[in-house]
Amino acid sequence: MTQTAIPYLLMRGGSSRGPFFRRDDLPKDNDTLARLLVAALGSGHPLHIDGIGGGNAVTTKVAMLSKSDDDWADIDYFFAQVSVEDCLVDFKPTCGNMMIGVAPAAIEMGLINATEGQTLVRIRAVNTCAKVIATVQTPGGAVNYAGETKIDGVPGSAAPVALDFHEVAGSMTGKLLPTGNTKDTVLGIDVSCIDFAMPMVIAKAKDFGLSGYETREELDANKDFFKKMEQVRLAAGKLMGMGDCTESVTPKFGLIAAPQHPDGTICTRYFMPWATHPTLAVTGSQCISACALIPGTVAQSIVAPPSSSPVRLQLEHPLGNMEVVMQYERNDSTGTVPVSAGVVRTTRKVAEGSVFIPSDIWAQQN
Image (cartoon, rainbow, N blue to C red; front, side, top):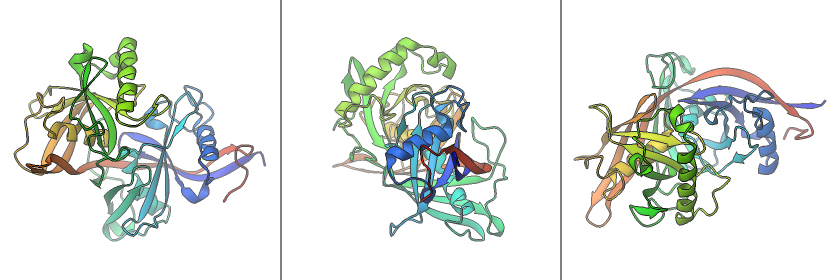
C-alpha cells in the first residue's frame, strides 16, 4: 500500500473546525505526528488542495482524544494548530472552540458512555493542563446536535454545549501576570500580558492608530499594523518568559476598544496571530475577560469594575458577540483574581471515515 488510512471525525467546534482523532491511532513521537498532520490537512498550499484543511487557521485545527489516566479527568484532549501555508505544527496552545467538540466526539468514538438526558465529561487539556467540565445534551443516550442555540459567526442553530474552565491561570507561563505587571510598555505601546486559558498580549486599538471597529478584511489588509503588532508580540513574548516565539502562535494578540452597543462590555479583535480571527477564540475570550477584571490593565479605562461575582461579560467581535461568565475573588492582598470561566457554544459532527496520508510519512498503525 502507498497510503495509510487513519479513522477520524470531522467536527465543527464553536467557530472552528477540524479532524478529531483517537490518539492511539497516531504516531507517538511529535515529529512524525507533525508530518502526518501537515499531510492530512494539506498545509503548504493556500487552498489545502491535497488535504482536508479549510484554508484558514480556524479550519486547520486538530483534536486528539484518549481516555485519561488522571484521577480527575475522563478524557485527555491533545491539540495541534497546523499552519495554513508554512507546514508548521504548534503543540503549545490549546483551543477552546475545538474543545466544544471534545465531549461529543469522545462519546461518538466510544471513549466514554453517554447518560440519559445530559452527560458531564471532565476534560484535561494536555497542552495547558487546564481542567474543563463539558455538559452535552444526550437524550436517549446519544449526542444531540439539533437545537435552538445560536452563536455569532456560525449559521443556523444547534444544541448547546456548556464548558466550565478551571485552573487556567498561568496556562503556559505558570503566572496569571507573566511579567509581574498589570501593564508594560513594549516598543512604545502599552500592553497587558495576561495568561488565563491562553497567554496573550493585549493593547488598545487606538495606540496602533486604529478604531478597534475595523472589519477582519480591513485589518488583514493593513500590513503596516501586522508588522508592528508582530514586533510587539515577539518582544512581549520574551518579557513573558516564553523565549523566541517567531514560529509559535503564542502568545496571541488582542486589541480592545470601548463597546459599540449598549449591552456590550468591550470590543475585541483577536489575532491568530498572523491573521485576524473571524470571531473570537474561546480561550482568548477568557483571557480578555480576565484583563477586563484586573485593575491596572489596559482595559481599566474601558471596563468599570464589577460589583459581584460571577459577572457576565459581552465581548464584541467582528461577527457579533460572545458571552463569558467569570468567577473571581477579590481581597486586599491579592486584588482581583479570576478563578474560572464559563461559555456556551455549539458543535456538529460533519463527517466521519478515514483520511489517507502517504505511507512514506507513516506506514503502520500503533
